[in-house]
Length: 113
Length: 112
Image (cartoon, rainbow over all chains, first blue to last red; front, side, top):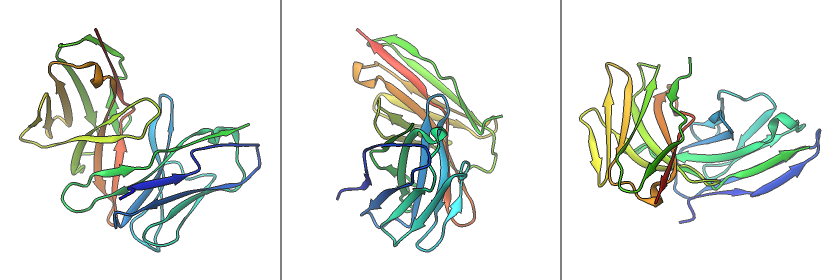
């Protein structure tokens, strides 16, 4: 069981470039999430997907798009990167059994210059 | 007002000390409560869930007061390895999915 995997681990972009962050989970979880974490701001929800084929905006969706490709995969796209999107991005999925424990990927450290 | 508020710390305590963290939340419809631990430059991981009756896991005790919308975490006999940031987390249900709201975290540094 790999849990939640994310690629890439690190990325440097120039302003205006685009990129897609990939996320996959092998725990058969229905719900998946994308967060960003900035110093002093905590984890903020960008988008989430309750199940395959559905996505919803979180607290800070502007400048991002998502795709729930199938039950396993949930990608985050930056169409035109801005310095304000410099952050650490975490993908997560949730166990809706009894615990509602959220499992996180290792994160992507993105710098936009 | 933030949905989940925590004292950012840092709390600097000697090994063996007892330390307590507090957290308040604003959404009275919140359904589940957790403490997560995050080590430097790593992903958050579940430390423990928090129940109204209070619950204990080894040296860690969590309490929930729904009336006051207040959550606490007590760490007894602190170890160097407890040094980390502790995140207070609250779950609500949107109608289609669970949504977790994270506090900004309380940093703990345990020293010799």
